[in-house]
Length: 240
Ligand SMILES: C[S@@+](CC[C@H](N)C(=O)[O-])C[C@H]1O[C@@H](n2cnc3c(N)ncnc32)[C@H](O)[C@@H]1O
Image 1 (tube, rainbow, N blue to C red):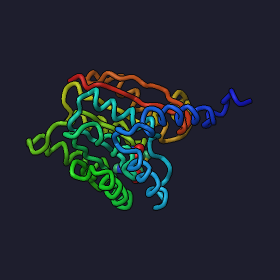
Image 2 (tube, helix red, strand yellow; image 1 turned 180 degrees about the vertical axis):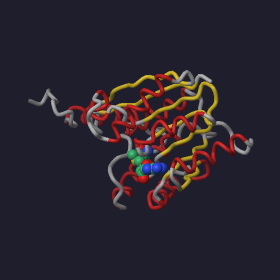
Image 3 (spheres, helix red, strand yellow; image 1 turned 120 degrees about the vertical axis):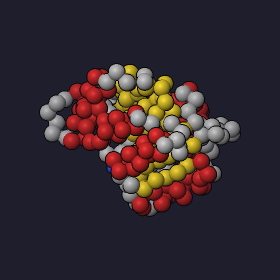
């Protein structure tokens, strides 16, 4: 029965709503930023180069852009670049926005840089190749030495096992009132189970429980459905 979704898989209805709304609110709008053609280019070159189809959806990308604008973010940190699709959305939050995006794969980073350049954001985006756990301490040191500004916005979308380590490390270089967004935290509802044996679910549970115990952060999880199935974001604000 079409209206039911017992397996939590994507449905045509969720996809149709995403397409309908995104087409009206962005893709068919002449003034849309980033340009729909640059977004499509990023997705099609990523697919042609064999990257997995695990970028945020168009509507989720726009949500990230709007969240960054609401936070008046100028310095954005992203962990997990893939082909640069979400990076392009984040860079589009304003002409004075800079993005540092950390990616462990040299190949992904190379594709991302080309996609970001095609979208005309290369001057404001630095794709850093390396494992998040190696790169973040270097950035913390640079911020501590005053060689780099504090970040206003963090988007975490890499290996889920290290979600909390990424947020914990990044807090040392974020300003008070900064926003943290972590993708893929609901995982088709597996989040509420403690017996999955899935290290990614365990990574997300550690994130949720750690944020809940940490007075530096105030957070919430929003469940989402859409063309990328049933999942959700953790959003938090940095209190201190
Ligand atoms: C879900 S994809 C990112 C999607 C991208 N944020 C988007 O929406 O367009 C996850 C990316 O994280 C990268 N990654 C995995 N482990 C990592 C690590 N330890 N450090 C940095 N990046 C990592 C993967 O290579 C992959 O490109």
